[in-house]
Picture 1 (cartoon, rainbow, N blue to C red):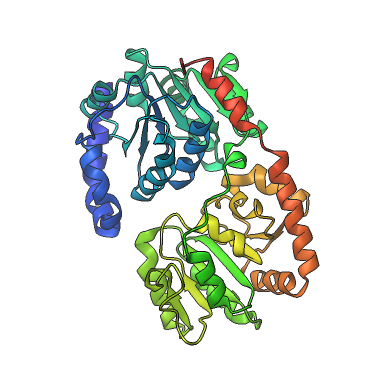
Picture 2: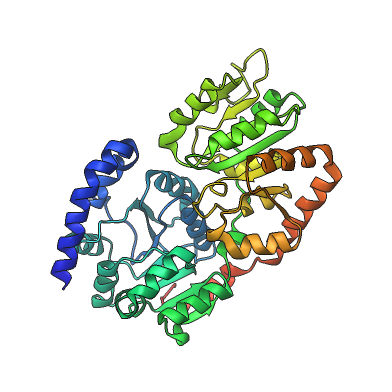
Length: 426
């Protein structure tokens, strides 16, 4: 059976590789050497392995790591280059006390590659975040008596349907090998139990994203954006997805208010594509990559209306400048992105209808009147207009959103306690 699984995995990779390389080659090519076994040298002693698929999970993993013993060595893996860059940046400060941190890519789920990884790093335990479960990896950890925990676990609507159909297979190969499960929300806990997770191993620990520390300001960028805004309010549209930028740009064109829009696509391989969209609309814009920073040198004589944030790791800190923030991935059916990044600064948040990946978070914010729902581009224009025209109302919405963030903190302590039941952290 495992031979057939690996054969199917290898065949799937063989079929998918040409398509992925043709469409997103620049994105995925850097991941291949490590995922095929060309790994960095091991450092430290009995490291704890943290797997964070991409940028959001890397932030969650770093939040957990800050609460772990400072001399506990770590291996951190990601799947995407953007996640890798985020992990390198987030974990670098954690090495200051002598802790060893190796950041690399997750191997493909094939026996030879997984075995080579485990041989090299010999982790004391594996922590997975949210919903990254790989059957052969879990099997090999079990065979080597490496305990596995899933923290910040969540089950999306789409995934839940697939998992229910898998039935016993899902329970046997993906849930039974897990030593502990820490669920984000009561709904996630209920779904995990209904799928066959063992009650004694499953707990409600909360969402670690509420506990992420405030991002460090991007050197020179915040002042440069203030200079570009020239006393105009700043609107941020963050983590936008394919098909969403035209809606956002049209909404901004209809606004008929003096403002600077900072537009931040989710995926770096789309930066050029989105910039062409800005140029085709003859909008006055500039790219962050062409801004000389720090100090604002090289800024245009006439202030632009749009700045394309074609950079990595800077969006989270830029939200603090916003008079209002639109969270991308919500006007198209992708499940949404994290609204906490803006709400933590007391910034009024606007989202579209697709918030399946953050359903509980969005529901809590909406119940407290801490966000605005904009089902389409016209509603986004009206939301921006209202928040700019009524600053007191905007500030109150921001305060209510921040109160929800503060109320939900504490997942780190619960997650560390759950992990310590399974893994020796000393």
